[in-house]
Length: 296
Image (cartoon, rainbow, N blue to C red; front, side):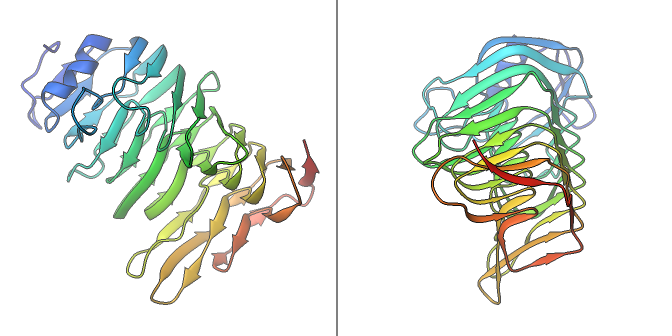
């Protein structure tokens, strides 16, 4: 079923090809490590296996910086919750690390990213290259270069990068270079180079970060160089960062917006900013003075 191992922390299952990768579905709570570059081909997301809902991955995957390359992630039973993994909810933190996506395309509806659709734990040192593309065709959005939605109160997405082009329609919302929406958790020391295009709530790192009454949704020590296009609530780092005592805890701090353009795709220029499209809680950020606001 795999290329070696027994699925334990000391002897993880070895993943050396696309068949091994899909066979993760047979042991979704086990430990896995990638042992070779994998040519993906046409691949149905892990967790999209015909059940009544996407099956959650609750184990651990270490890509060991080998590539997953040259393929398309397609839909099986579900067009939403789309990524290499549909849905990651592991108690191991970080549960996903050292994955490199190269020349991989994905088209999903809502909750779509090249690594996973929805992430409820941490992620470390994952990346996409400039030949990757992410396209969201859903009615709502939540589309990111790596992750659709990140929601894990004490967890980090750390040292990750996106170079993929990320795109949703002008009537869709929540799109970002790293994540579509940062619901809970911390994005730290990440960067985006890819172009990001959306409707409302569009950002170089995250489309929105708001948190809840108890936990923060923080973007920190990140930078963006990719051009950002949106209709409203569009910024170089976050489309919308919001803080309200006892309600929401969004924060964007110590980030750098180095993109040349913020582009209005349609309508009136509403809630656009070099760092955030709208914010009431930022700290020590920097943006290029030469950044231009323009129309497509």
